[in-house]
Length: 338
Image (cartoon, rainbow, N blue to C red; front, side):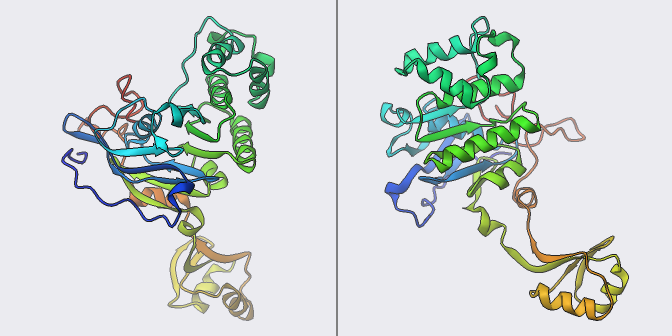
């Protein structure tokens, strides 16, 4: 069951960042559909210059949150400010680029002509169209009809749309969906380059490896609520244990009797803080060490530890776990409660 829409509000998280340095700030942000809270009491804070990863299972409320940030969905309670102005206001939208859910374009127009339509509406110079097609690797296919594009090419055109206004803030929902490994890397490098040039990136994705390589800070939502928000380095700080790999694992386990907390094949997790001292001890005992270092929790482990099953999981009784309402990738058009 999802949280009830009778919400008990909490104060906004103390981020240690001055409010004028926040490009996204929400307080008690809530969206209800009937008596189901798709998003409940959400307190997000995204600082200028960050690459912020927004994570959670299907049905957790990620896309609903993004839609509220850009004015596509009105919140039931709470507030959201984007670029210092109320979310969805002309002032907030003037300086952001957005791609939420699967991009929709005119299928009978070319990619270039679709961008031209959007550029005219946004007051963007035509020369910018060629620039963004080149940036996303679509320059050679810009004249082809949108209907002929693969899913990955459609995603690239969606990213190109978000870049038309040369935004200060990018809000992207699954920008690498449908891309092959090379395409994923190209988009990652593109976003990293834009961030180095000063663009703040707010990124929702299931690609945890990409989040780990790209993001500086993450927020994790589960059943509509924010359960974790912190710097990625802090979340992946050493656990106080040491990982050891040794072809002489039996000998190593005897030498470290009482300290080995977990063993799988040649891999041992040891209760110790000083990897160098541990290595010296093993070598002195004649145990060969092929790898040693502090244990760090992976982002995948963290996400699995603080979230439940997504709304697309079907249990043995035929029912769906998760929100149970308008949730998941196939949500009713207009709610986007993914």
